[in-house]
Length: 167
Image (cartoon, rainbow, N blue to C red; front, side, top):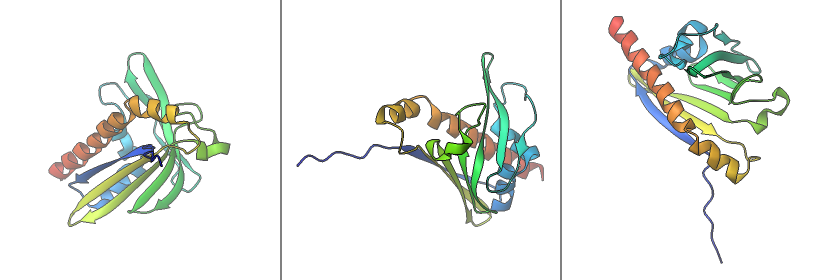
């Protein structure tokens, strides 16, 4: 009998932030606090939109470099204030491209916030759809998506630490 290993269809990143989880949740949920998501090497373009309700969206213009910019964001699937956000990642007019009528065919991001004393453990899980072929999943994971999310989350960690020092 031949055994085959199940293919990895996503990734998980974990960080501990020097802030209470209420503050970390607000950093994900309030447009004026979501600036950390953008690439700091380039000027912000356009507003950040947040409609924090199941079925609502968040959206911002991401500028990667002089030649690459796109809308990104998500459609909220589950919201448990201060504890959990789940969203289909992407934008109908951006990257990753999503179809509001077929959200199960897009990446799903889960953000868990766990209290660790006066700090917050953030667990970010990106799950790629079962409908994607193994080749598509391999290409996606090889594209630098994990590293991009890691850099993005590290900006949140640094921003929260900076805010704590300013208080």
